[in-house]
Structures are given as C-alpha cells and as structure tokens.
Length: 387
Image (tube, rainbow, N blue to C red; front, side):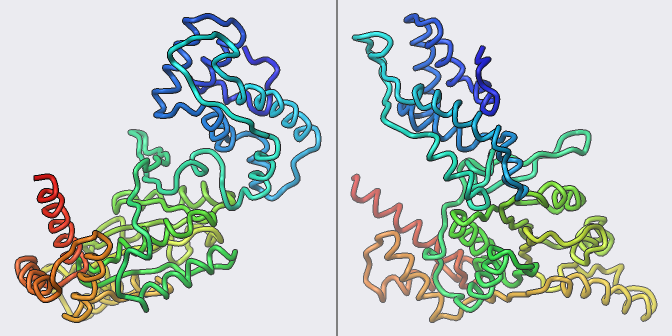
C-alpha cells in the first residue's frame, strides 16, 4: 500500500487517511462508508482540512532537518513536491467522484498543499511539527521504567492576558522576559510567589496562550517529576520552538530529593542552559521550603546552614515576581471587570457588597474569589433566563 510515498509515508498510519486510500484503490460502498465513519469520528466533515492538518503536523525527515537549521536536500524537496501533488488531488476529491446518491457525505475544496506545506516549513520555528504543531500545552506522562513522553493537553485553559485584571507590573515583567526568549536571547527563569489565588498560574497560562502563534509552548511538570528535567532539556534542546517549563504550586520539605534536582538545573551543574527553554514556577512561599520543627532544632551553625540552603534555591531564579492579595480597590476592579466579561448586570453598589461578603467567606480578597463569585452570579443569571 502507498508504495509511491516516501516523505509522507507515515501519513497512512492515520485511520482516516488509510481508509481513504483503500477507497480510491478499490472503490466499494463498504469502503466508502468506513472512510466517512472514520472521518466523522474525528468530529469533522471537512476531508480537505483534515488531510491538510495531518500533513502540516507530520514529523518527517524534512521537518527534522529544517528544525536543526540545515538546508533540506534538493532531492527530498523534489520528492515532497511530487507527493504533495498527489495528496492535493486526494484532498479535492468529492463524494460524487466515487458514488452518486450516497446519504453520508463529506466536504472538500480546492487546495494547493505544496504551497501551504513549504510556507509552513519555512516558518517551522513558529509552528513546530508533530504534536507541537497541533497542541500548545503538554504534561509529562511517566512510564513504569522511568521513561516519559509529552502528553498533549487537548482542552487547555483558554485564558488570555486580556482576561486578567490588575497586577500589571507583575505581568509586564514576565511578558518582557518571555519576549526575550522568543527573540532568541537567553531569558531568565522566573519565580512567581505570593498569596494563594492571586493569579500566578493564570498569568503563566495566559502568556503561553498569547504567544503560542509565535512559537511558544508550555510543558507542565509535577514536583515529583523534577528528576526528569535534565532529560527533558536534552529532548527540547534541538527543537526550533520555545518552551516554558511550568512548575505549579512548588514547595519542598528540607529533605526532599526534588530540591537538589531543581537546584542542579537552575545553577546549570547538570547541563548547559538551553537557549529555548525557561522555568516558570509558582509558589506561596518566597524561599520555596517549609521550615519544619526538626529544622529549627539543633545547633545554630546547622540551623544557619539549612536557612542559607533554602534561601539559595529561590535566589537561583533570575527574576522573582511577588503577587500579594489585592487591596479593596483592586479587588473590586477585578470584580467589576469580570462582571463585564461574563455579562453579569447588577448595580455596582450591590455587586460590591456581595463581593465583600463573598471574600469574607473565602478567607480574604483574591482574584480567584472574584472569579468564583462572578461565575456563580453568571450561572444564576442563566438559570433565571431559562426559568
């Protein structure tokens, strides 16, 4: 099967494309139905777009060469053009090209896959390849033998910077550092610390979403996965995209093994700093380490050594950004701004009173409390409309 394909041979491992190929080689109503069924199961009826997206996200010899900054050999380019010409003819095929009067149909339209593909290849540092072309956020998936893979987050938090109200100075510091990374300069690792619910994690995710079309991807690691950092950095080092390695809600006991793993990466003792990655970590503690009763015991010299060790970890982040609980004015600004976003219509004084009462029940004012209140009010408003 598909003996004429070399560059795009792996396309035919996809069930939809495989069933289409069987249909064009040996048309039958059964093969027609199996193809349409497979396409519909991908939540689309647009065959042309499905094939185009599959081609653009495929990892092959050309994407690997282009991502390394080398010139793709001319013989490969000619092979690719030949194959893309054939694939373009496939993409344009309509149901009537096989059978008339079938009830299960699909969409197709004109497309020039050669032009689209080589345009994308010339901007591989912006679009990526493989799963990095399809998705913008990833998590670490570990296997039993301590190996790992990157699992795409298929439905990531869609939050944008425009959704975040307040904390402008904090956001600007992190945005500026991210733009340094995107401009191919060595950016700093960032520690976002401060009170819970102030938008530290939301800020990181919003920045990742905002700059995803400029080649930025986010990979989230849990604390227990920090030992994988050196291997992850090696894996990403030759990738043309830029990466935020995101560690959320980070804190350690003073004897955690993960403490040493992160410290080694931050100080560069396990590998050379990668030009295309930064670590963005959030924590409710500036120095990241909980001081235990045992740590406070013992002689003064030991205690001072322990204190210096814990402080030194946070100092290895090039930028530290503090998020404090909002004062009343900022808290209400966040509430009013979110009310507009969620189309919650309420007298401002009444909304302010509800917001203050809600904050008391939530142990204080915070951006998270403001969002929770407005989401509840929006839900109640919809219930009233549907009543």
